Image (tube, rainbow, N blue to C red; front, side):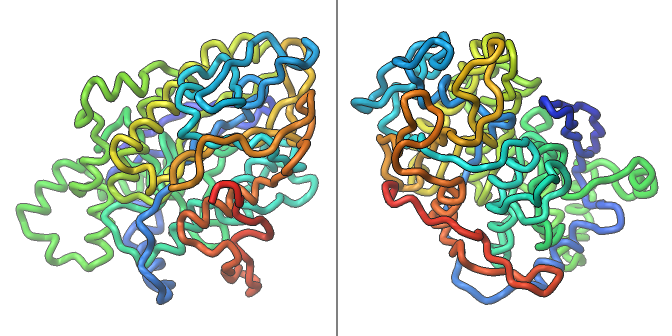
Length: 446
């Protein structure tokens, strides 16, 4: 099954996030999926078996306001505190915005970092900084990723751990980071994410890479129907004649593991309702998050869920937060509770953040970009929950104590995944590049 979509969303910088072509078969322009798998095999290095750990990244593209989520300032002047109240959480002394009552009720299963800060104030540069650990070159806010994303790094490190599902998946589409996927960069195309959507179910998978209409038409005769292909192949015994990599590629997009993981109808109506079905940015964040849980449970190592639209300038904050916050709150709370109920809370780390925070002072009813303070949500992974790490000053302008950098968050994530964040890979120039240029796991979470 093949779908070509043209939807796009834009933030304040006017950049379109292009939807990629959806492909439920093997064709990939000049480079097929089996070719990608051969590339992976050619670069396999000996190592220990991969740990059975995973990460779900809820990427709040646009940059959520810390004041209206995890770091309210009820005692600040009105132009700083905003119109929503702070409420108590299940953790004594820790308050959230009244917009997040469900997360407040299970705050003992969450850890909030309030003192995270960096220096990238543009969407493009901040997105790349937080998803790779490396700053983008000065004066180049946009452009492609120059360093591999966390998910791509995980796929590279675990490439010798062969599974029937890929290690890196993005929901609901590949292109959720400023129009470009957080991909393999110098590691190669083989480590970019697969995209899946609960709307399409098990019949559609976005394969890494882009296809133009011309390239698509040239390969049209090779695609056909996924369901028919599957039946024909199984009936003829052709699978026995495929080489190892072709068979693995075929299983990734048409095999039982993928079909079952992507089929939300296998969930009870009660579970689906618990995650929520309301649409935000034309997507059900709740159903996308439920799909992420199914994917990590089935063996995927790193799942990114796109939860965009947080770029609340002007009246955007007042107009959008009352609608958006309940959708986000419901999805996050359901995911955390579900992971605990299914015994996955040690295996899976949940990370929710965007590219930066928002300005302490309200401007024209909204808040602008502010990397000098931001809040980060973590849950699971056997980490120490029920705490707020660090504080900001009385107006939320900057960290007051325990200042942390996004790379410290990423180092914590890598530690959970069993990946040494000082490990190096060789870039095309022949130079060793470490997974992170700096950062240390956050000791309070150990």
